Image 1 (cartoon, helix red, strand yellow):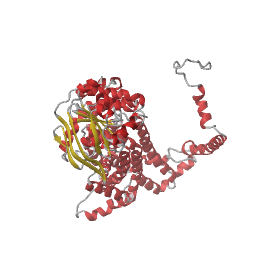
Image 2: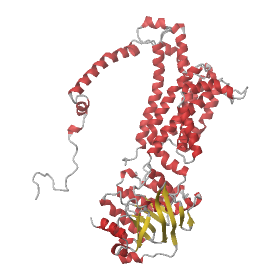
Image 3: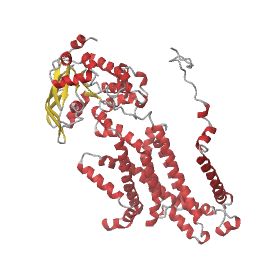
Image 4: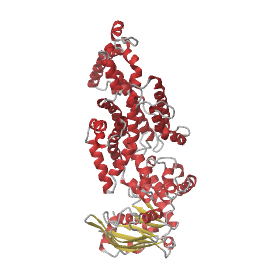
Length: 371
Length: 257
């Protein structure tokens, strides 16, 4: 018997568009902002708070701010807001530290070359990607000679590398070197060979159990006791090594989490097909494990990048060091807000870009439904 | 294909797999007890038995996914020892299909199929692609080649898994409950592929409860329980005239419900 209330014969029902009420901005607002009485109240309270706070911040940071002035006194005479003139005047120092002014172009060039070296790594549709990778591999050497000198360039003492440049140098080196090291440590920790496993566990647990500051102090002072007298071992190089080791221990644990999430069947299938250990890791397990670990890895990198400011404690003048130095200048005294907000913005731009890139990467690597 | 035709499939006298007095323990637990089995080239053997009887463990020993502790396993004239070279050589000749497919989710169907030929057999990519497409056509899903496994149904995934194994041109195929994780509607499409493979003369060792499949293509059925081979017979005899009480009980439970 055919049910009279049916509008279509069984098996002939077409795909219909969804009703209007499940789409559109008005629905979105009703659902997210005014869904229930509590929601309405929260929305209104939030709007009121924004009304109180935002104009004040905007006035201080933009509308009443002074961008060009010779000293704090001049700033105050002109307007009541933030005195960005300080950042303006000291901009070079914030970025380049005490690098010789005539040589600053070398840092600019390194930065441009760095972005170019990054391109094939970050974007898989770079033309001639394979050849470009060779350049990316050579970039650290190029950067070293550009920053330190040699091959006809004047030598610059590494202690003169400072400001935000120093943070970027330490951060980027740490990030680039700690990822492969961390992956090896993670694999070692899951190895069936007891000696390899024990060594990796000891290394990871030791490094994780010690504050970075302690390691930096070890780098700056104690290494001299252990090394034969007369050997000079560049302070920044020591810091680079310590920072790399430190973050590699964290990366190792993040990657280990990813490795453990990969079902055993994946390695079994690879084994059954005759792939060797390194092949199955490189082709099957790591691509999946690293994809899962992206949020954790980026989290560690962001943390590492911000931790580079700790070097100010062992006497290197990174961007924070320059900031403190400029606060001590009698002409600009009392502008702590402006200095630290400026530094915060520098870091935020870098860290936020990393976060956005990781989201892009996760979306790109997503392949169909999860089982 | 009739039962008579199945019996006519050629079985050579050459030995493909020989298991002699094999034992295996998980810690203190004695999983496999004195397994003796000879599989000739071209034979199709179905292994059944209750869960926990050691049937999966047994076939996983053949390509060293599990290690046996006593006895000998000889595959294709190569003895399975701790020698890594022997293990690699055996794995190249033995294909395996798993209950949960174990396709690589980050690679397309085509890449799943070409991975081992490229990295293990060192074939050029073009050639590996051609072979992969050939086998994907044989399992009737060439049009899915560029999709990811996550976009396919279970039956399709299992057929890809079979094609992936075949791309290594194995001499022996092991099936570890290939249809147990599938929806009822999809079982037959996988079994069809397996029957087709049996007809082509492949040496097959299948752990499965698909008794229809066993009747159709197997020339021997093995019943395992408690880590031992209880009974071993031709399908007709096995189903109609089981010898041991344990086999009778098992058959009555899986055939009449």
